[in-house]
Length: 364
Image 1 (cartoon, rainbow, N blue to C red):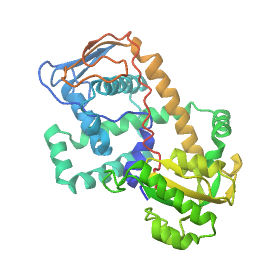
Image 2 (cartoon, rainbow, N blue to C red; image 1 turned 180 degrees about the vertical axis):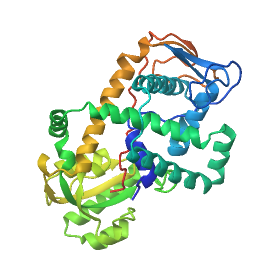
Image 3 (cartoon, rainbow, N blue to C red; image 1 turned 90 degrees about the horizontal axis):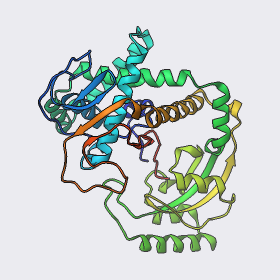
């Protein structure tokens, strides 16, 4: 089962819609801090209405994200994504300032305390991560500030979502809330621990088809799952995942669980993990009035993130006057963004990149 650590899952829910990447630091010019971590130190890399961002400040923010979401570093060499992330950070700064000084509730303070405590424990337990935090100069006050900034903005966005909008979002995605019992046997193409290639796609598909043929001929799920399946979470249980919400699975597996005829072994389903031989045993819809409080909160969060991304795409470019990231030798991708240097605000930057970090990519 590939689940996000609980403390990371909590913040990733809050940070939905943000592309997680890192930025290398520099040095130079100063500005007024205004209470922002790292502001007033380093070289200005962005100018926007009523403010600037320095490389020192952005390094702190990027390091913060790198600790919360380690996949951050894989984006380090992609200038377009650096610029996109910088633009999103500016958007958060602007929105946070517009909210003014609001006194935190006891619950909000508790949330920040809990997050910081869990994050610190994680950092202290890993020497490499601790070194990154120390090298960047990321302090407790910085971590608390960034978490408070983003969580406050998300809470404000969620407060604007109406009950009718939540219901409409449910109607558009109600299959996600089906409760499904499914058996599967995974023939993996990647090592589920390291991500390295385990076998060729064609070889995995061939084995999956052989397994399906044995099941179609009356083969025993328990015996075949134990022999062939590489999903450690279900192989010793006849491949069974019982009464699970469909939304907890990766997209391709979820679609098959929602659409495959009940009681029939379907054709192998390909996901990022390999090929799954599946049989849906039961599928029960969940009515809107039967959703849990967490389900409705996630629907609201999704809508809030959509609205926030719309702001980042439609409104933010009008407020940024200059982006001046350090140039890099890395070749540009085909995203159409400027690879570095000065970028005019009027250029249509695609800020609506959603990693959907909260998605539970369980190996089913």
